[in-house]
Length: 453
Ligand SMILES: Nc1ncnc2c1ncn2[C@@H]1O[C@H](COP(=O)(O)OP(=O)(O)OP(=O)(O)O)[C@@H](O)[C@H]1O
Ligand SMILES: [Mg+2]
Image (cartoon, rainbow, N blue to C red; front, side, top):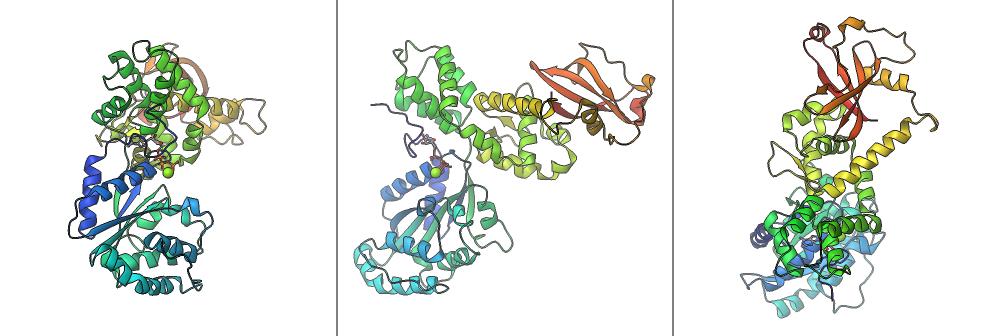
Protein backbone atom coordinates (compact mmCIF):
# COMPACT_ATOMS: atom_id res chain seq x y z
CA UNK A 1 0.00 0.00 0.00
CA UNK A 2 1.72 3.25 -1.12
CA UNK A 3 2.39 5.79 1.60
CA UNK A 4 2.48 8.95 -0.51
CA UNK A 5 -0.49 10.40 -2.32
CA UNK A 6 -0.48 13.94 -3.65
CA UNK A 7 -4.19 13.85 -4.40
CA UNK A 8 -5.32 13.13 -0.85
CA UNK A 9 -5.43 16.21 1.37
CA UNK A 10 -3.95 15.53 4.78
CA UNK A 11 -1.99 12.50 3.58
CA UNK A 12 1.42 12.25 5.31
CA UNK A 13 0.97 15.72 6.75
CA UNK A 14 4.30 17.12 7.86
CA UNK A 15 5.54 20.29 9.51
CA UNK A 16 4.09 23.63 10.59
CA UNK A 17 4.60 22.64 14.24
CA UNK A 18 5.09 26.19 15.40
CA UNK A 19 2.16 27.57 13.43
CA UNK A 20 -0.12 24.82 14.73
CA UNK A 21 0.95 25.38 18.32
CA UNK A 22 0.44 29.11 17.88
CA UNK A 23 -3.05 28.58 16.53
CA UNK A 24 -4.04 26.22 19.35
CA UNK A 25 -2.83 28.63 21.96
CA UNK A 26 -4.41 31.60 20.15
CA UNK A 27 -7.77 29.86 20.01
CA UNK A 28 -7.68 29.34 23.76
CA UNK A 29 -7.02 33.06 24.14
CA UNK A 30 -9.95 34.22 22.08
CA UNK A 31 -8.26 34.56 18.69
CA UNK A 32 -9.55 33.46 15.31
CA UNK A 33 -7.38 32.92 12.25
CA UNK A 34 -7.20 33.30 8.48
CA UNK A 35 -4.71 31.09 6.69
CA UNK A 36 -3.67 32.14 3.22
CA UNK A 37 -2.22 29.60 0.86
CA UNK A 38 -1.92 29.03 -2.87
CA UNK A 39 -3.66 26.28 -4.79
CA UNK A 40 -2.37 22.82 -3.77
CA UNK A 41 -0.17 24.30 -1.08
CA UNK A 42 -1.82 22.41 1.75
CA UNK A 43 -4.74 24.54 3.00
CA UNK A 44 -7.12 21.61 3.40
CA UNK A 45 -4.32 19.43 4.72
CA UNK A 46 -3.48 21.95 7.43
CA UNK A 47 -7.11 22.29 8.49
CA UNK A 48 -7.48 18.50 8.69
CA UNK A 49 -4.34 18.37 10.80
CA UNK A 50 -5.66 21.12 13.06
CA UNK A 51 -8.84 19.11 13.47
CA UNK A 52 -6.73 16.22 14.76
CA UNK A 53 -4.64 18.54 16.93
CA UNK A 54 -7.78 19.98 18.49
CA UNK A 55 -9.18 16.52 19.16
CA UNK A 56 -5.96 15.53 20.91
CA UNK A 57 -5.53 18.78 22.78
CA UNK A 58 -5.58 18.10 26.52
CA UNK A 59 -8.80 19.42 28.02
CA UNK A 60 -8.03 22.98 29.15
CA UNK A 61 -10.61 25.42 30.35
CA UNK A 62 -12.57 24.75 27.16
CA UNK A 63 -14.14 21.67 25.71
CA UNK A 64 -12.91 22.05 22.13
CA UNK A 65 -15.27 20.98 19.38
CA UNK A 66 -13.60 21.24 15.95
CA UNK A 67 -16.10 21.39 13.08
CA UNK A 68 -14.87 21.17 9.49
CA UNK A 69 -16.79 22.96 6.76
CA UNK A 70 -15.75 23.02 3.10
CA UNK A 71 -17.39 26.00 1.41
CA UNK A 72 -16.58 24.80 -2.10
CA UNK A 73 -18.43 21.55 -1.46
CA UNK A 74 -21.60 23.56 -0.78
CA UNK A 75 -21.64 24.86 -4.37
CA UNK A 76 -23.69 28.02 -4.87
CA UNK A 77 -24.17 29.48 -1.41
CA UNK A 78 -26.61 31.89 0.21
CA UNK A 79 -26.39 33.25 3.77
CA UNK A 80 -29.19 30.83 4.78
CA UNK A 81 -27.31 27.91 3.30
CA UNK A 82 -24.12 28.88 5.08
CA UNK A 83 -25.73 29.38 8.48
CA UNK A 84 -27.59 26.09 8.11
CA UNK A 85 -24.36 24.33 7.22
CA UNK A 86 -22.73 25.76 10.34
CA UNK A 87 -25.70 24.81 12.48
CA UNK A 88 -25.75 21.24 11.18
CA UNK A 89 -22.13 20.82 12.16
CA UNK A 90 -22.81 22.05 15.66
CA UNK A 91 -25.91 19.95 16.18
CA UNK A 92 -25.81 17.02 13.76
CA UNK A 93 -28.65 15.36 15.69
CA UNK A 94 -31.19 18.03 14.70
CA UNK A 95 -32.54 16.70 11.45
CA UNK A 96 -35.09 19.27 10.34
CA UNK A 97 -34.23 22.91 10.31
CA UNK A 98 -36.82 25.64 9.84
CA UNK A 99 -36.40 27.93 6.88
CA UNK A 100 -34.17 30.85 7.69
CA UNK A 101 -35.89 34.02 6.48
CA UNK A 102 -33.89 35.97 3.88
CA UNK A 103 -32.37 38.93 5.68
CA UNK A 104 -32.94 37.34 9.12
CA UNK A 105 -30.74 34.27 8.67
CA UNK A 106 -28.34 35.26 11.37
CA UNK A 107 -31.07 36.06 13.92
CA UNK A 108 -32.79 32.76 13.08
CA UNK A 109 -29.49 30.94 13.52
CA UNK A 110 -28.90 32.53 16.95
CA UNK A 111 -32.43 31.65 18.05
CA UNK A 112 -31.88 28.07 17.07
CA UNK A 113 -28.68 28.07 19.08
CA UNK A 114 -30.73 29.29 22.06
CA UNK A 115 -32.93 26.26 21.62
CA UNK A 116 -30.12 23.72 21.62
CA UNK A 117 -27.94 25.51 24.18
CA UNK A 118 -29.12 23.28 27.09
CA UNK A 119 -28.31 20.23 25.01
CA UNK A 120 -24.83 21.53 24.16
CA UNK A 121 -24.13 22.26 27.81
CA UNK A 122 -25.29 18.80 28.79
CA UNK A 123 -23.07 17.12 26.21
CA UNK A 124 -19.96 19.30 26.35
CA UNK A 125 -20.21 21.23 29.62
CA UNK A 126 -20.55 24.97 30.21
CA UNK A 127 -17.30 25.75 28.42
CA UNK A 128 -18.06 24.22 25.05
CA UNK A 129 -16.05 25.89 22.33
CA UNK A 130 -16.84 25.25 18.69
CA UNK A 131 -13.85 25.83 16.41
CA UNK A 132 -15.15 26.31 12.89
CA UNK A 133 -12.53 25.05 10.45
CA UNK A 134 -13.76 26.63 7.26
CA UNK A 135 -11.99 25.63 4.08
CA UNK A 136 -11.99 28.08 1.16
CA UNK A 137 -14.03 30.73 2.93
CA UNK A 138 -13.31 33.20 0.16
CA UNK A 139 -15.04 30.92 -2.36
CA UNK A 140 -18.31 32.22 -0.87
CA UNK A 141 -17.57 35.77 -2.00
CA UNK A 142 -18.52 35.21 -5.61
CA UNK A 143 -21.93 33.68 -4.71
CA UNK A 144 -23.02 36.12 -2.05
CA UNK A 145 -24.69 39.39 -3.01
CA UNK A 146 -22.82 41.42 -0.38
CA UNK A 147 -20.67 41.27 2.77
CA UNK A 148 -23.57 40.65 5.14
CA UNK A 149 -22.68 37.02 5.91
CA UNK A 150 -19.11 37.99 6.74
CA UNK A 151 -20.30 40.87 8.92
CA UNK A 152 -22.56 38.41 10.76
CA UNK A 153 -19.68 36.01 11.19
CA UNK A 154 -17.63 38.79 12.70
CA UNK A 155 -20.49 39.61 15.05
CA UNK A 156 -20.79 35.96 16.10
CA UNK A 157 -17.09 35.81 16.96
CA UNK A 158 -16.75 39.19 18.59
CA UNK A 159 -19.87 40.57 20.21
CA UNK A 160 -22.75 38.10 20.03
CA UNK A 161 -24.12 36.35 23.12
CA UNK A 162 -22.24 33.27 21.86
CA UNK A 163 -18.91 34.91 21.20
CA UNK A 164 -17.12 32.95 23.93
CA UNK A 165 -18.32 29.70 22.37
CA UNK A 166 -17.06 30.25 18.81
CA UNK A 167 -13.71 30.55 17.06
CA UNK A 168 -12.88 30.44 13.39
CA UNK A 169 -9.92 29.12 11.43
CA UNK A 170 -10.57 29.88 7.77
CA UNK A 171 -8.45 29.23 4.71
CA UNK A 172 -8.48 31.11 1.45
CA UNK A 173 -6.43 32.08 -1.55
CA UNK A 174 -6.53 35.56 -3.04
CA UNK A 175 -9.95 36.89 -2.23
CA UNK A 176 -9.23 36.24 1.41
CA UNK A 177 -7.08 39.36 1.36
CA UNK A 178 -10.20 41.46 0.82
CA UNK A 179 -11.94 39.87 3.77
CA UNK A 180 -9.16 40.19 6.27
CA UNK A 181 -7.11 43.23 5.36
CA UNK A 182 -7.37 46.28 7.52
CA UNK A 183 -9.84 49.12 7.28
CA UNK A 184 -13.47 48.31 6.80
CA UNK A 185 -12.95 44.67 5.79
CA UNK A 186 -15.55 42.51 7.49
CA UNK A 187 -13.16 39.94 8.93
CA UNK A 188 -10.21 42.13 9.85
CA UNK A 189 -10.47 40.65 13.34
CA UNK A 190 -8.78 37.45 12.09
CA UNK A 191 -5.05 36.91 12.67
CA UNK A 192 -3.27 36.27 9.39
CA UNK A 193 -1.11 33.22 8.84
CA UNK A 194 0.57 32.11 5.65
CA UNK A 195 1.52 28.80 4.14
CA UNK A 196 5.12 28.61 2.97
CA UNK A 197 7.58 26.18 1.41
CA UNK A 198 8.42 23.27 3.70
CA UNK A 199 11.71 23.69 5.50
CA UNK A 200 14.56 21.25 5.00
CA UNK A 201 13.96 19.36 8.26
CA UNK A 202 10.27 19.07 7.33
CA UNK A 203 11.16 17.74 3.88
CA UNK A 204 13.44 15.12 5.43
CA UNK A 205 10.67 14.12 7.79
CA UNK A 206 8.27 13.74 4.88
CA UNK A 207 10.72 11.53 2.96
CA UNK A 208 11.19 9.27 5.99
CA UNK A 209 7.44 8.61 6.14
CA UNK A 210 7.79 6.42 3.04
CA UNK A 211 11.53 5.71 3.07
CA UNK A 212 12.34 5.19 6.76
CA UNK A 213 16.08 4.93 6.07
CA UNK A 214 16.05 8.05 3.94
CA UNK A 215 17.19 8.24 0.31
CA UNK A 216 20.74 8.21 -1.09
CA UNK A 217 22.20 11.73 -1.20
CA UNK A 218 22.18 12.20 -5.01
CA UNK A 219 18.49 11.32 -5.13
CA UNK A 220 17.71 13.57 -2.23
CA UNK A 221 19.59 16.42 -3.88
CA UNK A 222 17.73 15.90 -7.13
CA UNK A 223 14.42 15.98 -5.28
CA UNK A 224 15.48 19.12 -3.45
CA UNK A 225 16.42 20.68 -6.76
CA UNK A 226 13.12 19.87 -8.48
CA UNK A 227 10.65 20.31 -5.62
CA UNK A 228 12.14 23.16 -3.60
CA UNK A 229 9.84 23.32 -0.60
CA UNK A 230 6.52 22.65 -2.32
CA UNK A 231 4.70 19.96 -0.31
CA UNK A 232 2.45 18.93 -3.18
CA UNK A 233 5.32 18.53 -5.64
CA UNK A 234 7.29 16.60 -3.01
CA UNK A 235 4.45 14.16 -2.42
CA UNK A 236 3.83 13.90 -6.14
CA UNK A 237 7.41 12.90 -6.89
CA UNK A 238 7.77 10.68 -3.83
CA UNK A 239 4.58 8.94 -4.87
CA UNK A 240 6.13 8.27 -8.27
CA UNK A 241 9.38 6.97 -6.75
CA UNK A 242 7.45 4.71 -4.45
CA UNK A 243 5.45 3.15 -7.23
CA UNK A 244 8.19 2.90 -9.85
CA UNK A 245 9.08 -0.55 -11.17
CA UNK A 246 12.65 -0.17 -9.99
CA UNK A 247 13.27 -1.63 -6.52
CA UNK A 248 13.33 1.32 -4.14
CA UNK A 249 15.50 2.85 -2.92
CA UNK A 250 18.53 0.84 -4.11
CA UNK A 251 17.48 0.73 -7.77
CA UNK A 252 16.53 4.38 -7.92
CA UNK A 253 18.74 6.88 -9.69
CA UNK A 254 18.65 10.59 -10.36
CA UNK A 255 17.30 9.70 -13.81
CA UNK A 256 14.34 8.02 -12.08
CA UNK A 257 13.70 11.24 -10.17
CA UNK A 258 13.94 13.23 -13.40
CA UNK A 259 11.41 10.89 -15.03
CA UNK A 260 9.16 11.13 -11.99
CA UNK A 261 9.14 14.92 -12.46
CA UNK A 262 8.22 14.63 -16.13
CA UNK A 263 5.41 12.16 -15.38
CA UNK A 264 4.12 14.40 -12.61
CA UNK A 265 4.05 17.29 -15.08
CA UNK A 266 2.15 15.26 -17.65
CA UNK A 267 -0.43 14.00 -15.19
CA UNK A 268 -1.11 17.13 -13.16
CA UNK A 269 -2.11 20.36 -14.82
CA UNK A 270 -1.67 22.57 -11.77
CA UNK A 271 1.33 24.50 -13.07
CA UNK A 272 -0.75 26.03 -15.84
CA UNK A 273 -3.41 27.09 -13.33
CA UNK A 274 -0.79 28.64 -11.06
CA UNK A 275 0.68 30.63 -13.90
CA UNK A 276 -2.74 31.75 -15.16
CA UNK A 277 -3.50 33.02 -11.68
CA UNK A 278 -0.40 35.25 -11.48
CA UNK A 279 -0.89 39.01 -11.43
CA UNK A 280 1.27 41.07 -13.78
CA UNK A 281 3.66 41.86 -10.96
CA UNK A 282 3.90 38.27 -9.72
CA UNK A 283 4.72 37.19 -13.24
CA UNK A 284 7.47 39.74 -13.60
CA UNK A 285 8.90 39.02 -10.16
CA UNK A 286 8.89 35.29 -10.71
CA UNK A 287 10.38 35.69 -14.17
CA UNK A 288 13.24 37.83 -12.92
CA UNK A 289 14.03 35.40 -10.13
CA UNK A 290 13.67 32.36 -12.38
CA UNK A 291 16.11 33.82 -14.86
CA UNK A 292 18.69 34.82 -12.31
CA UNK A 293 21.47 32.23 -12.43
CA UNK A 294 21.04 31.07 -8.85
CA UNK A 295 17.29 31.67 -8.79
CA UNK A 296 17.74 34.55 -6.39
CA UNK A 297 18.14 38.29 -6.49
CA UNK A 298 18.76 40.94 -3.92
CA UNK A 299 15.61 42.90 -3.24
CA UNK A 300 17.14 46.05 -4.60
CA UNK A 301 18.06 44.41 -7.93
CA UNK A 302 14.66 42.78 -8.16
CA UNK A 303 12.97 46.13 -7.69
CA UNK A 304 15.15 47.76 -10.30
CA UNK A 305 14.41 45.02 -12.80
CA UNK A 306 10.64 45.49 -12.58
CA UNK A 307 8.76 47.61 -15.03
CA UNK A 308 7.56 50.89 -13.65
CA UNK A 309 3.85 49.97 -13.74
CA UNK A 310 4.15 47.05 -11.34
CA UNK A 311 6.92 48.21 -9.05
CA UNK A 312 4.56 49.36 -6.32
CA UNK A 313 3.12 45.84 -6.03
CA UNK A 314 6.44 44.13 -5.31
CA UNK A 315 5.89 43.45 -1.60
CA UNK A 316 2.45 42.00 -2.19
CA UNK A 317 3.74 39.85 -5.04
CA UNK A 318 6.54 38.45 -2.87
CA UNK A 319 4.09 37.61 -0.09
CA UNK A 320 1.74 35.90 -2.53
CA UNK A 321 4.47 33.94 -4.31
CA UNK A 322 5.69 32.91 -0.84
CA UNK A 323 2.36 31.52 0.29
CA UNK A 324 2.07 29.83 -3.08
CA UNK A 325 5.27 28.03 -2.02
CA UNK A 326 6.96 29.11 -5.26
CA UNK A 327 9.56 31.35 -3.70
CA UNK A 328 11.38 31.14 -0.42
CA UNK A 329 11.07 34.52 1.20
CA UNK A 330 12.60 33.53 4.54
CA UNK A 331 15.50 35.87 3.85
CA UNK A 332 13.50 39.00 3.00
CA UNK A 333 16.52 40.69 1.43
CA UNK A 334 17.10 37.89 -1.04
CA UNK A 335 13.98 36.13 -2.33
CA UNK A 336 14.79 32.80 -3.95
CA UNK A 337 12.94 30.54 -6.35
CA UNK A 338 11.78 27.36 -4.65
CA UNK A 339 11.80 24.34 -6.95
CA UNK A 340 13.23 23.94 -10.44
CA UNK A 341 10.43 21.78 -11.78
CA UNK A 342 8.09 24.75 -11.81
CA UNK A 343 10.89 27.18 -12.60
CA UNK A 344 11.96 25.34 -15.76
CA UNK A 345 8.39 24.75 -16.83
CA UNK A 346 7.67 28.47 -16.33
CA UNK A 347 10.69 29.58 -18.33
CA UNK A 348 9.87 27.22 -21.15
CA UNK A 349 6.22 28.20 -21.10
CA UNK A 350 6.72 31.96 -21.07
CA UNK A 351 9.43 31.60 -23.68
CA UNK A 352 7.04 29.69 -25.98
CA UNK A 353 4.23 32.17 -25.34
CA UNK A 354 6.45 35.09 -26.21
CA UNK A 355 7.65 33.37 -29.35
CA UNK A 356 4.15 32.66 -30.58
CA UNK A 357 3.05 36.17 -29.69
CA UNK A 358 5.78 37.64 -31.88
CA UNK A 359 5.79 35.06 -34.68
CA UNK A 360 4.85 36.55 -38.07
CA UNK A 361 2.10 33.92 -38.47
CA UNK A 362 0.12 35.04 -35.47
CA UNK A 363 -2.40 37.71 -36.47
CA UNK A 364 -1.83 41.02 -34.83
CA UNK A 365 1.62 40.07 -33.57
CA UNK A 366 3.97 43.04 -33.53
CA UNK A 367 6.62 43.17 -36.17
CA UNK A 368 10.23 43.29 -35.08
CA UNK A 369 10.28 46.98 -35.89
CA UNK A 370 7.20 47.57 -33.70
CA UNK A 371 8.67 45.46 -30.93
CA UNK A 372 11.88 47.38 -30.97
CA UNK A 373 10.00 50.65 -31.05
CA UNK A 374 7.81 49.51 -28.20
CA UNK A 375 10.87 48.54 -26.21
CA UNK A 376 12.53 51.80 -26.95
CA UNK A 377 9.45 53.84 -26.21
CA UNK A 378 9.29 55.17 -29.77
CA UNK A 379 5.79 54.94 -31.25
CA UNK A 380 6.07 53.12 -34.57
CA UNK A 381 3.96 55.74 -36.36
CA UNK A 382 6.21 58.51 -35.17
CA UNK A 383 9.11 59.46 -37.35
CA UNK A 384 12.01 57.36 -36.30
CA UNK A 385 14.78 59.26 -34.65
CA UNK A 386 17.92 57.43 -35.57
CA UNK A 387 20.36 57.11 -32.75
CA UNK A 388 23.72 58.45 -33.58
CA UNK A 389 25.85 55.46 -34.48
CA UNK A 390 28.81 56.71 -32.54
CA UNK A 391 26.89 57.24 -29.33
CA UNK A 392 26.05 53.55 -28.89
CA UNK A 393 28.50 51.53 -26.87
CA UNK A 394 30.48 49.18 -28.96
CA UNK A 395 28.90 45.86 -28.14
CA UNK A 396 30.13 42.89 -30.10
CA UNK A 397 28.88 39.33 -30.20
CA UNK A 398 30.03 37.40 -27.10
CA UNK A 399 30.37 40.56 -24.99
CA UNK A 400 28.85 39.89 -21.57
CA UNK A 401 26.46 42.35 -19.92
CA UNK A 402 25.84 42.39 -16.19
CA UNK A 403 27.90 39.21 -15.89
CA UNK A 404 25.12 37.08 -17.35
CA UNK A 405 23.81 38.23 -20.74
CA UNK A 406 25.93 37.20 -23.68
CA UNK A 407 25.37 39.47 -26.65
CA UNK A 408 24.42 37.72 -29.89
CA UNK A 409 23.50 40.62 -32.14
CA UNK A 410 21.98 44.08 -32.38
CA UNK A 411 18.25 43.96 -33.17
CA UNK A 412 17.55 47.63 -33.50
CA UNK A 413 18.11 51.14 -32.32
CA UNK A 414 15.73 53.85 -31.16
CA UNK A 415 15.64 57.36 -29.81
CA UNK A 416 17.10 56.52 -26.43
CA UNK A 417 18.70 53.14 -26.68
CA UNK A 418 19.08 49.87 -28.48
CA UNK A 419 17.84 46.29 -28.30
CA UNK A 420 20.18 43.35 -28.42
CA UNK A 421 19.52 39.65 -28.74
CA UNK A 422 21.33 37.98 -25.87
CA UNK A 423 21.48 34.59 -24.22
CA UNK A 424 21.42 33.81 -20.53
CA UNK A 425 21.62 30.28 -19.12
CA UNK A 426 21.07 28.94 -22.61
CA UNK A 427 17.83 30.92 -23.13
CA UNK A 428 17.47 33.72 -25.63
CA UNK A 429 16.23 37.15 -24.60
CA UNK A 430 15.94 40.65 -25.90
CA UNK A 431 17.62 43.21 -23.78
CA UNK A 432 17.03 46.89 -24.04
CA UNK A 433 19.85 49.26 -23.23
CA UNK A 434 18.82 52.73 -22.32
CA UNK A 435 21.43 55.39 -22.69
CA UNK A 436 21.34 58.34 -20.40
CA UNK A 437 23.13 61.47 -21.61
CA UNK A 438 26.21 60.27 -19.87
CA UNK A 439 25.81 56.90 -21.43
CA UNK A 440 25.78 58.54 -24.77
CA UNK A 441 29.33 59.34 -23.90
CA UNK A 442 29.73 55.65 -23.62
CA UNK A 443 30.25 55.62 -19.87
CA UNK A 444 27.13 54.25 -18.34
CA UNK A 445 24.59 51.71 -19.51
CA UNK A 446 21.66 50.09 -17.85
CA UNK A 447 19.62 47.11 -18.72
CA UNK A 448 16.12 48.32 -18.17
CA UNK A 449 13.89 45.66 -19.50
CA UNK A 450 14.02 42.23 -21.01
CA UNK A 451 11.65 40.08 -23.01
CA UNK A 452 11.99 36.46 -24.01
CA UNK A 453 12.84 36.10 -27.68
N1 LIG B 1 2.26 19.94 5.10
C1 LIG B 1 2.17 18.95 4.20
N2 LIG B 1 2.85 17.81 4.39
C2 LIG B 1 2.82 16.82 3.48
N3 LIG B 1 2.10 16.87 2.37
C3 LIG B 1 1.38 17.97 2.12
C4 LIG B 1 1.37 19.07 3.02
N4 LIG B 1 0.60 20.02 2.50
C5 LIG B 1 0.14 19.55 1.35
N5 LIG B 1 0.60 18.32 1.11
C6 LIG B 1 0.35 17.50 -0.10
O1 LIG B 1 -0.15 18.38 -1.11
C7 LIG B 1 -1.43 17.95 -1.56
C8 LIG B 1 -2.28 19.17 -1.79
O2 LIG B 1 -2.65 19.68 -0.51
P1 LIG B 1 -4.09 20.26 -0.21
O3 LIG B 1 -5.13 19.56 -1.01
O4 LIG B 1 -4.24 20.29 1.24
O5 LIG B 1 -3.88 21.72 -0.77
P2 LIG B 1 -4.97 22.85 -0.93
O6 LIG B 1 -4.24 24.12 -0.70
O7 LIG B 1 -6.14 22.58 -0.07
O8 LIG B 1 -5.34 22.66 -2.46
P3 LIG B 1 -6.61 23.25 -3.25
O9 LIG B 1 -6.27 24.67 -3.53
O10 LIG B 1 -6.63 22.42 -4.50
O11 LIG B 1 -7.81 23.07 -2.39
C9 LIG B 1 -1.96 17.01 -0.49
O12 LIG B 1 -2.75 15.99 -1.08
C10 LIG B 1 -0.70 16.42 0.11
O13 LIG B 1 -0.32 15.30 -0.64
MG1 LIG C 1 -8.15 22.35 -0.54
